Length: 70
Image (cartoon, rainbow, N blue to C red; front, side, top):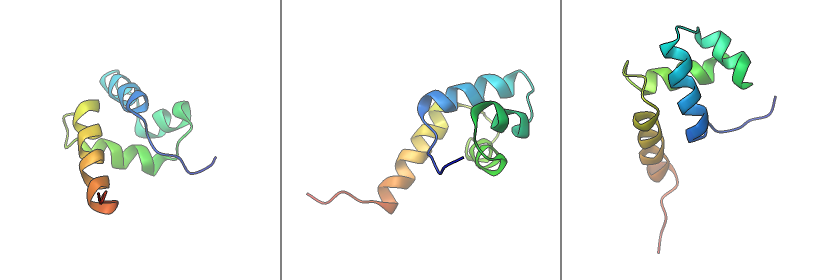
């Protein structure tokens, strides 16, 4: 398993699977991520489990880490 980032599609799958009461560990296995990646993603949503919220949070934080200079 190599290092990879979650995509919006991955986040949508996590949202659906959490609504179906799948555990973080089971979701990680199904999506081929490590458990901590899924756990952090669920925490990122602050209990709302929304793919859009998580994606927006990711994009905002990556702007801070990797600012684009024009």
